[in-house]
Amino acid sequence: MSSRPAAEQRLSDLALLRRVRDRIDREYAQPLDVEALARGVNLSAGHLSRQFRIAYGESPYSYLMTRRIERAMALLRRGDLSVTEVCFEVGCASLGTFSTRFTELVGMPPGAYRRQMASETAEMPPCVAKQVTRPVRNQEAPVTGAGLA
Image 1 (cartoon, rainbow, N blue to C red):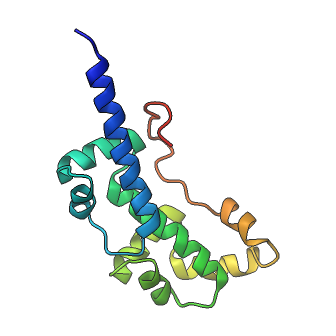
Image 2: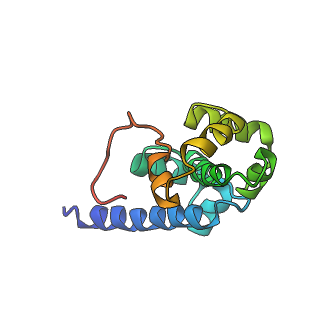
């Protein structure tokens, strides 16, 4: 018996997962949930969550929140929006959840980050500031598969 059909199925699944990840990257500020993401690729929410975690080392929700926090960091560095405005700008509906996730990922509350980064990145080009302040989630997560990024 050949493993070709299983390999083809795996490639097909990875293509669907990549579509989900790309949608999250594009639409991070929109109200997204796992059920809506799964419907978009004709998978069940549970199957999508399991396969996404295997492929990318984190759940779709965690990936979405990381994208939102990355964008929030850039907006906070700009300094022209309040923390509440940034929270809603990046698609979070709850200031409490936003602040909690931000603190977990960045290591400090959004207000403290805004104050600290305003002085530290003032002379830095935005592209450099984005790279040196980028959050990294799940550094200890095992790398699975090749070509998934």
